Amino acid sequence: MTKAVYPASFDPIHYGHLDIIRRAAAIFDEVIVGVYDRPMKNLLFDIHERLALAREAVADISRTRVTSAHRVNSVSRDAARSPAPAAPGLPASSPTTKRARFNSLSRRSRVCIRTPLADSS
Image (spheres, rainbow, N blue to C red):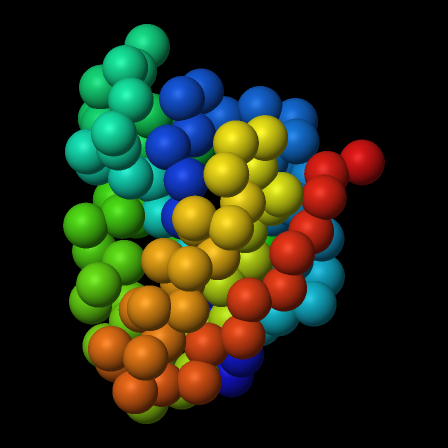
């Protein structure tokens, strides 16, 4: 079973996010949407609101699961049993920083995590 992890703040989730999630769901067996619980920016919605909005938005997309991103660390531990590609979108700010964070996660967990970049249409 191939899993993809898509972590972001989703504040709020929008059509670009949904486009990436739909395309990832067409490729992978499961897409885990990780909503950051403490991103380093000012937020419009709290974690509970963002989780509810994300769950409602992806309800019609099969093979998706929404969780808070503090659980993404446990997802990376699960990845030790089945490698999980990350499916991030191409962020408007600092894509190399996010890529470095994913690569660092891969090195620390000693798991092969492939990071495909998908730009929303």
